[in-house]
Length: 103
Image 1 (tube, rainbow, N blue to C red):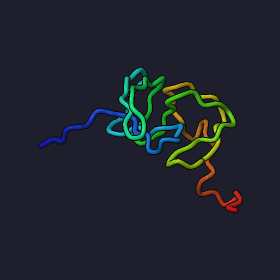
Image 2 (spheres, one colour):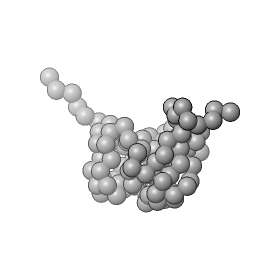
Image 3 (tube, rainbow, N blue to C red):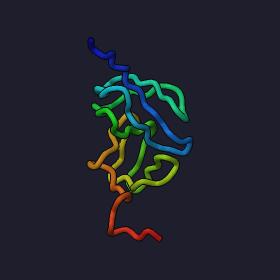
Image 4 (cartoon, one colour):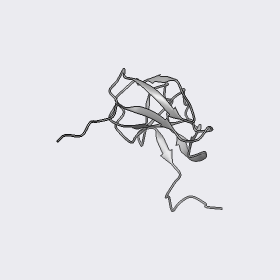
């Protein structure tokens, strides 16, 4: 018996988040995804976003804090258009780093 794969969607956890997480399946470029959680509507991916990775529901700019779970998790290192992949290629994480002041 095979399991049904749920369609991909974007889960935005907290109302202040400026990134969402692709859940359900990978999302190819140009995929229209419903947003769920603290935001509703639709988002069209501008590139492939793997399952479990972050996506920008709105434009993000270099130096902007990335908010997930309602708290900053890092800074953008490059601009990202709506529907773009937010990951290590353009996000400088501030979580789990021993070189950052925890104060």
